[in-house]
Length: 218
Image (cartoon, rainbow, N blue to C red):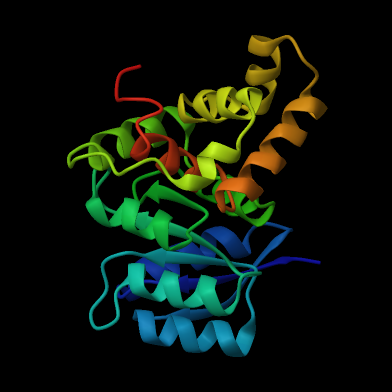
């Protein structure tokens, strides 16, 4: 079964380029195109794509609001946010709204294609170092929020794993740092995600920064 992809971008040439790129892959297929956020939401309801490539800057209903509506109504649909700017405040807003990751529009075709596959697997498609730099810059531009009550329910080890995730460590790297098996780390990650109410690593990093468990540059 091919991964069904919906393209949401107000530039027709961009959509055509993405379609040619994705349709050339044996495991990917573009099922629809939207020129704005409202159309993206409606097509998601009708076509039920696996992944939406969502431009954040579109007229009318923008990509952030469209992402929020799609992930709330259709949680099985994964959104990969796209922006022309690396340090765009809308990127963090999209991640908070439920996007499974973010890629700048100037990524290579290989990175974009792999990003779609990664998001479809339920993982974050943001390069860990870019993710921590991006969120660290934008989240801490304002005063940190009070620590969510949910963090009080974490075990010491789960809190430690959350900090390592926020530092950009993969599960394999966390296992090496803590001298435990990758399966043990996976269990900790699943548990802490459930406790703090996030669905992926991108949202977990935001929680860690906003709770001041880690600060930019650490």
